[in-house]
Image (tube, rainbow, N blue to C red):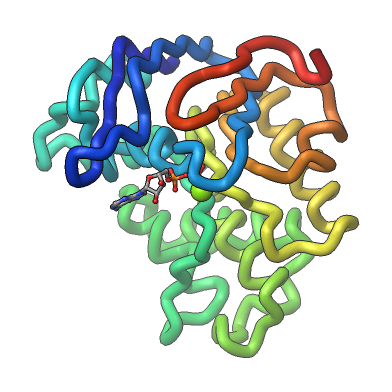
Length: 222
Ligand SMILES: Nc1ncnc2c1ncn2[C@@H]1O[C@H](COP(=O)(O)OP(=O)(O)O)[C@@H](O)[C@H]1O
Ligand SMILES: [Mg+2]
């Protein structure tokens, strides 16, 4: 599903990822961990072509994305569901519309978009808030809407960047088990976190980044 070959990333001449090689098979669950500034977010951004590497190759779902043409970006984004650190909800749209909007963008009919949006909101325990505007929700609820939006079109690859940052421990646990379910149903999940309690709550493959290099790649706990 994913392959990085000798990937370097520099910002203003400063290397933040160095000579990364990584392979993630379809259906894997991978934690990306390491301290703040280690390069976790940068690595995820390379995978949905929000950044380009300074050197090396990035492959996602059989497609080379490090030099992807602008016209092919929507196709890539259809394969990838992204849960951002900051939610980027549309402030003037309701919770339900925030989700149907994305599904319509991916080509679903209004009726099908509505049906799927409702189902995913129900799954996340937010269907009673479907008509609310994002600003009326708590931080944790907003985060769950962002998660619902990423999951609604059933992407084959899910990239989650510190997805539990604004959730209390119960909700963080729920989110992790939801991502595990989705992984069990066949999606590849890559979850970046510096939160050790999250990392330790399920056994899974983990890579530890440090200064932009992979210091460990194997099952966690080791
Ligand atoms: N757009 C950017 N411009 C310049 N430096 C950046 C940019 N994005 C990230 N960095 C730097 O790259 C390094 C890795 O950042 P990041 O990938 O966000 O790490 P992490 O997610 O592990 O905390 C940090 O030193 C950060 O300051
Ligand atoms: Mg980060």
